[in-house]
Length: 118
Length: 114
Image 1 (cartoon, rainbow over the protein chains, first blue to last red):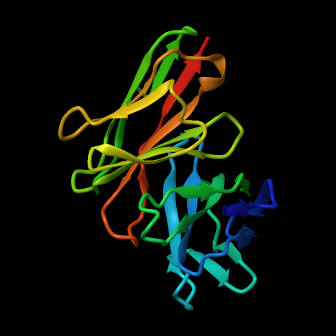
Image 2 (image 1 turned 45 degrees about the horizontal axis):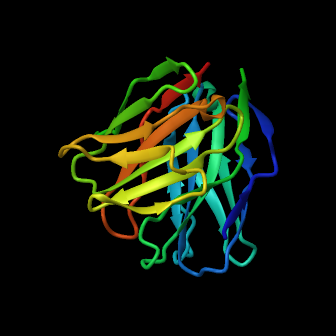
């Protein structure tokens, strides 16, 4: 079974600064997807960024980028120019790419609570 | 942008009562999911549904739970006899077919069992 570990329960960053959230995972699969979801106080789960394991290039979405290290099974999220609206719980998630499994359920980490200091 | 919508946003129910949580997935999506998040804990997979049947379920999804797609748009989660430990945020999610497609979540239904 796959596991996802987020070792930082809480992080804080000054507004306009850069912060990196860590995520490691354990899997024996070679085909999979990784995601970062954001959960603001409203508790909605919002997709931030995704990475396909077969892609060597790190995914980027505006101020959000990842550092995907497949051999190390590491998938960190970097938020540049942090804004007050970035304050939220951030969840790292893993999904199998195995077509036989079918449902492609997500396995989540425990989350990192990010505070942004004005 | 299309959204997954859920109702109710918050429900309070007495222990032992039946609860139905409703979801309208994104219209061209064919895989549907329910996830649960107990307060302060991580999001956990409950069940996936495809082609009018359960495709996968977790250990949490016991006989007290059931899912249904009663018409072409709604996807429901029923808890037959609620327990205190069922208090949680329940998220509905959906995705298109194809292994590469992202799962999109609704805003959640917060269930409080008293």
